[in-house]
Amino acid sequence: MKKKVTFFLKQQAGWVVFGKRLLMSLIVLELVACTMAPSSFNQPSPSEPPALPTATAVVPTRLPTATETLVPTPQPSLTPVPTATTRPFDLDQFSTRLYSGVQPYHYVEDTCQYLSNRWGEDKSSPDTVVVPIMYHSVRQAGKEVLDNMSVTEEYFLFTMDYAKKLGFETITSAELAGFLYRNEKIPPRSMILIIDDRRPGVARDNFMPVLEKYDWEVTLAYITGPAAPWEWMELDRMYKTGRIDVQAHGFMHQPDTYFTEFTEPEVIQAEVNGAIPLITEHFGKPPVAFIWPGGNFTPPAIEAVHQAGYQLAFTAYGRGPLFYNWIPLGEQEAKMNDPLMVLPRYWSTSATVNLDEAVAIQKKMTDFTEKNRAEEYRWYAAFCADYPPLINYFEEEFINE
Image 1: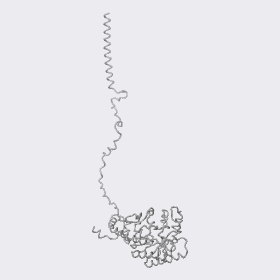
Image 2: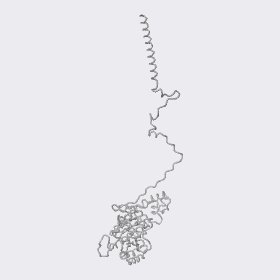
Image 3: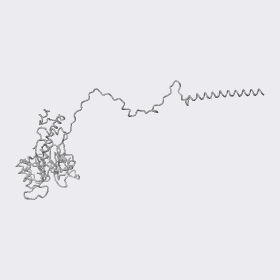
Image 4: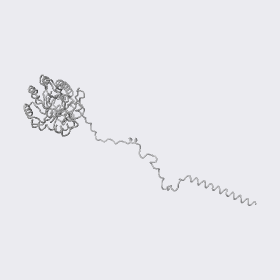
């Protein structure tokens, strides 16, 4: 019995030792496992270093925009930087008080060309003024004026004498075109007298004596549609005196042929072109001016006038006097963007007042010219080397400077 107990105790002691050893082994294995990666199959071999994490996982693929300013800029080259060239400065433009809603408009875009014509040799002085006056009927002495387009014979004669006293001389349409386009020489105070419609009797009976007295000319804005032979004979006779300038005033000149937005193209062509062959046949040269029938004009009509070869066209608006590159226009004319095709005309019924206005504006233009001429010469000298030299008004002044 004693032996059995001893064997049993030894056996139990052996299991305790085995258990301790087993427990220690398990602990060692657990410690080793903790030092290993989750999957031993994905571990690289000792000869391969472990891969680094992908950069996009922790930083942006490019630096923020703000850091780009830190990049050094290229160093400047050794090529010398040219000196900045002088740019044209703005010249003052003449302005004066005109009727309400009226503004002066310029039509010469090239400033060098403008100054060359303004101050060049054999040109009109910069303050040369032109007064266009529109006439219709002149009533005989003692007869009543029946409309707002006619004047009495007394007022007509007074106007002519007053214009002469102020120093005005007449010019033709061709002379006006030369002045407005190129500042060709005309009298410093010029006027163009225009008789509208088919009125050879007014030219013969009222104007001709004055024209001969003052060595003047008058322009007939003539309706050239069907006319009796005696009319052309009368015009031919007056034309030979050198006192008559005949220009176009439409072919039919009827209310249904006035230019409106509804006027058919063929009507426009007939009214604009119909006068050209007749005037050329009788007077040896085509007309240069078109006087708008009824005072009406439209963009298509203006385009037709250009295509027909006219250089000027007149409205029935009394806006003010004309200077080279300076045309006073109201809003309606200004919309056409073509000043030489919508020239203003004073009415005969207020001609003496308008002559005074023109003289007053001319004096202001003279003052402006005196004040600004040196500056205009400097501008021309600086920027217009390819243009002809100007007249030597200021030679001594510039030498001294």
